[in-house]
Image 1 (tube, helix red, strand yellow):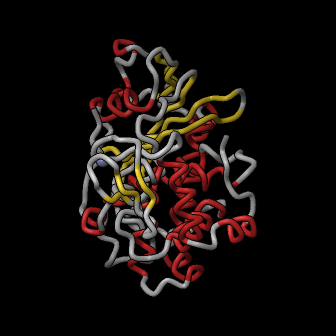
Image 2: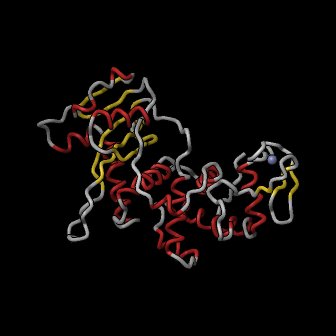
Image 3: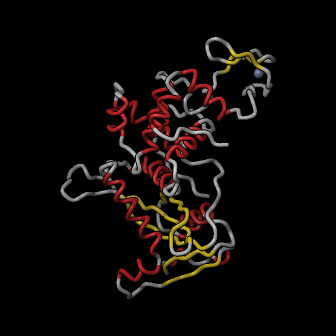
Length: 311
Ligand SMILES: [Zn+2]
């Protein structure tokens, strides 16, 4: 049974204390009761400090140890409000927005929190897309008109996969890829789409050979045809690409650095795949649940540039 606040008032009422937040996190981390992260023992004493004392290895364990909230210096009540704010806004929020709404003293804290939360937006071992899937690549970011001088960055190439769901769009996956080579595109498709699916692409040569790796390849060649022929034949990936670009320019004002783009793609995907969810509280629940499953990410690791590995 998924238990989450339905409204902001509900959130304020339920999570007004550290104890209430900790108890909620406990139920997400250990739904079947305490399990010591060191020795796996299930018996523990709850201490007045909010820690659990393992009866076997005597380790004192906090419910947030080894999770996204590891050693956080700010109260969990503030984190809960940040997560509510992030998940309740349809288009997401900027670091400035979070700083303002929560009254955080530092922009860096707000920025770091958002990046930590983005890392929790991808569930480890998530399902691949299946059925009929459109795949395309698009350039994102880079130079902006009227911003010469500081626009030294090149555009990033992003691969997009979008499931067909009748006439509409099902789930999506996205990843930044180094180039439009066969290796990169096949890697993305293997990563994002279940074998046996129908993969619909344009006639770009790098998509060739998908049949040999277990997909049914549906090609529409657009060479020599008007530009909107591609949009008409693969409307879902084109719509997703334009929504992504609008979101990066709108909510984030185009200020996303290429080395952080992967995490913005994850956030966009998290929101897009839950866009029809009736209760925004469900996103709050899911994000907190995933935050309890991923390890801590220190600031220095967030600022470290990295490339997404594609197998
Ligand atoms: Zn133990």
